[in-house]
Amino acid sequence: MPYNFDEIIDRKNSDCLKYDFTVERGKPEDVLPLWVADMDFRTAPCITERMKKDVELGIFGYTNHKDRYFQAVANWYQAYFDWTVQKDWLLKTPGVVFAIAMAIQALTKEGEGVLIQQPVYYPFAAVIRDNNRKLVNSPLVLKDGRYEMDFEDLEIKIKNENVKLFLLCSPHNPVGRVWTKEELVRVGELCLKYDVKIVSDEIHSDFVYPGYKHSIFSTVDERFKDISIICTAPSKTFNLAGLQVSNIFIPNPVIRKAFQKRLNAVGYCEPNMLGMHACQAAYEGGREWLEELKVYLKENLDFARDFLEKRIPQIKLIEPEGTYLIWLDCRALGLSEAELENLIVQKAKLWLDAGKMFGATGAGFERINLTCPRSVLQEALERLEKAVAALTA
Image (cartoon, rainbow, N blue to C red; front, side):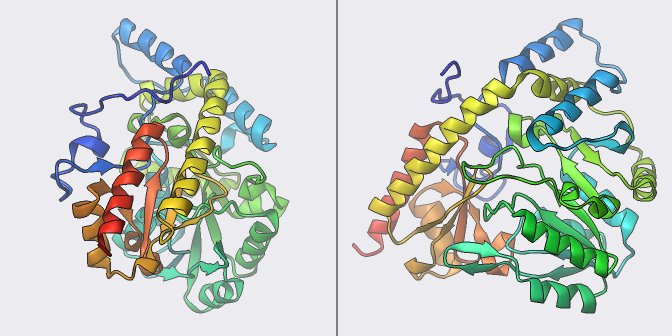
C-alpha cells in the first residue's frame, strides 16, 4: 500500500471543526471525536501537488473553470457510473447543502411541502425549516436490520401534504443504504405522478461496499432527467470539504434557469480557486488513492463489526451498503436519550453524532465515522466497551 492510512496526524490547532471546537460545541476537551464526516487522512498526493503550484504562484484572484475541469468531472462519472453529462447541465456551488437551499428557494414557495426520509442527514430538516417550508417526513422503516422506504406512506405524504420537492439521500446518510434501481424507479414514478421535483444528494456515491452498486438517480429512467437536480462533490471522496466546491447537474433548462437565478440573487458566481483545482486534480489523478482508501475502510468496517459482535454485543451494527459512516443501534442498553449521551460523552469520552439529531426515529442510535487510523477506531471502541461494561458493574 503506497499510502499510509495508519499515520496519526495531529490536526489540533488547525481550526478544524472536528478537533478544535469541542468546548464551543459543549463537549469536554478530552473527548475522542468520530462525528463530523471528514477524514483523518491526508488527501491524494496529486491534489496537494496541484495546490502547491497555486500557492507558489502566490496570486489568488478571480477564477472560473475551463473545459478541462468539466472533462475531468464528466470523465469520472462516465467511467465509474456510466453517466454521460452535458456541459450546460453543470452549475457549481460551495457545497451540497447550499445547493439544496437554492433548490428549495427556486422550486418551492413558503408553506409548501418538502419531503425527507428520516433518520437522515440533519441539515436537510434545518434548511427546510429555515426557508419557511413545511417539513414532510416519510420515515424509513427498519426491518430485519435493514432500512427500507415505506412507499405507501410516501405516496400518502406526497399526495396529502402539498409536497413539491423531495430531498433524496443516495447513498443514505446515516443508515448506509445504497438504493436499488427498483427502489429509485418507484420513487421517480411517484414524483412524476404528483409533479414533484427531486434533489438527489449523491455526495457519498464513491463509497459503496462490495456487492452493491450506486445508480445516479437521473439515469435509471430517461424521464427522470427532467425532474432532477443531481448534487455531487469531491469533498467526501477526497476529504476536501473545507475547499468548498460542489458540482450540481441540472438537465432540465427551466429548472436550471430557476436555480441559476437563485445563485445570482445570493451573489454567488466564481468558485473557490483552490477548491476547483483540487477537484480537477482529484478526478484526473486520484483514483489509485481512492481505491487504496476503500480497501482500508472495508478493513475498518470489518474490525468494527467483529469488535461489536464479540465485545459489545448489546450494540448492533446496521450493516452499511455505502458511505464511510456506520449507524449503531444502542437501544438494547435500555437508556434514555440523556443517559445514552452521558454514557458516550462523559463515560466513554467520545464525541459521536447522536441519532436523534437525524430525526425522532434516530433516537437510541449513534453515528460513527470510520475514516480514521485503525488504532484510533480501536481506542474509541475500547472506550465504548469499558463504559458499557460499567453499566452492570
